[in-house]
Amino acid sequence: MKKKIMVCCGTGCTSSKSENIIKALKEEIKIRKVKDIEVSKTGCFGFCAKGPIVVIEPEETFYELVKVEDAKDIVEAVVSGNLVERLLPKEKEEFVKKWHELNFYHKQKRIALKNCGKINPENIDEYIEEKGYKALEKAVKEMSQEDVINEVLKSGLRGRGGAGFPTGKKWQFAKDSVSDIKYVVCNADEGDPGAFMDRSILEGDPHSIIEAMAIAGFAIGASEGYVYVRAEYPIAVNRLEIAIEQAKEKKVLGNNIFGTDFSFDIKIRLGAGAFVCGEETALLNSIEGKRGEPRTKPPFPAVSGLFGKPTLINNVETLANIPQIILNGGNWYSEIGTETSKGTKVFALSGNINNVGLVEVPMGTTLREIIYDVGGGIPNGKGFKACQMGGPSGGCIPAEFLDTKIDYENLNKIGAMMGSGGLIAMDDTKCMVNIAKFFLEFTVDESCGKCPPCRIGTKRMLEILTRITEGKGKEGDIELLEELAYSIKDASLCGLGQTAANPVLSTIKYFRDEYIAHIRDKKCPAGECKALASYIIDEEICKQCGICKKNCPVDAIKGEVRQGAFEIIQDKCIKCGTCVAKCPFKAISKK
Image (cartoon, rainbow, N blue to C red; front, side):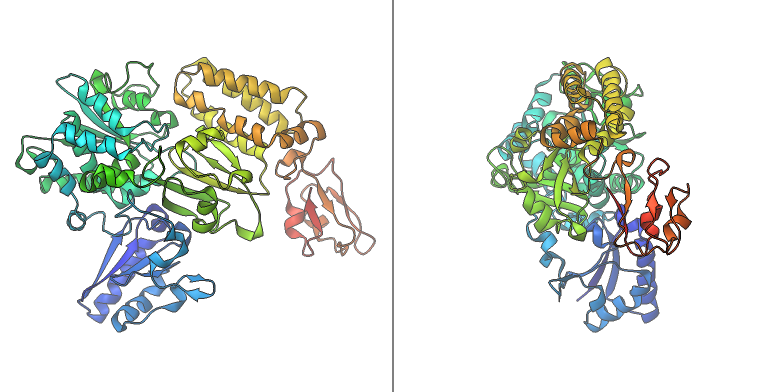
């Protein structure tokens, strides 16, 4: 039986030289003159913390942290039927052989990520072997436009880009708009810090997006589509270009698809990295060659969108679900998830978490399950403090809500939002005032400047937060932040401005004591704000060696070798942390 060595070539593993691993494997196979082993690239397996990843099919043997020099042993093991034990992951001191047996995958249900890590994204034949384009064929040959939309409505699928608007309703609005020309647009402008869901789908399964866009085009009566993707995703763009050309060659894209009178074509437009262009109307302006600024609504894009024509806009993850819904039926999809939030959700786990990576879990999975069962918990024995969900538009969820079932309504109730799916875990060393400042800095940088509430209001909020983290906060600052936040929320033109204050409001709500400590006590409880930090030498631990004094760049440490404990002169200390790093006895700590 032919063996296949699958090598992850997502962005993460590619940056760790997985392409060189492919070359080394092929060279080793050539040297051995083995003919029944194929080496193939694939998309992201999701377990990014363990990359580069190599999987042997059909056994599903999972090798982690693979290096170029491991190629010889891997090929030898495949030929002999053995295993390279040192490359197998370990859980509870036991080797795990198959990737689906890892705890990381136990609670996952892969629908949007179905083919990622399973097929070569640059080979349309492998996609077709996994029932690729069967959904499109079914739609155009066996179903009416209304039939397709009804299946999407029955599925309960909601937009995965952030707002959670029912996808079927959006499709219905676009279909009902009367026009000679209509468009389908895929929003792949993924700009949230810590988010890489859309990128991974485009890199690992680009044909699913092409197929979904064509199905959407058939459903609403459009013959042309655009994928708006940021230029910072070169691998995704390249694979998308390859996939479009292959789809045209197979005649599943272009004129008279599957011998019907339905024709559909797709073009790619590259974004220059402006976060605001993730907002659908700013995105449309950018495609048209205009400045990326939001438009006033109504009219909504489904009525007047790209070039003034009715336009359906869905993000990558939303579209990735469509082929499976059409193939298996809306009722099948609606059985997954919760009553109001159907299906699965892809999350990008990052921050202070052991299993950094991409996960897809059913809606209704608790935050605790995601952080501890899938994510493997917090590293270095630290405690879980909070997580940021929804990117700059989202909020911080404290540990008290670990057992919250993740869906749109529950997150809104606790002051957060689903967003596109970024989930940044934070341990108990993080300062929540500083976290709010970080996200607001991002928003201020990315504001398009069109409306004053966002342009000016977020700048004023950032000034206050900066003052607080520098120890210059004053009474009334918290109340002023809240007043500004609600004013910006109510008066901003687009979703970016309307949600810009969410990280600030949620941290004030759940971590108000940290704000008070910064303002009244001039202390950062987490010790993270440099201006409020103090470095202290423990007299009982200090060995009077003088290493700290020797390495201090500003001579802020006084004392003589073997003549008593050394002392840090706080007025001179620049909080660089060099003394902590250099002390071999761990006698210096940050307070």
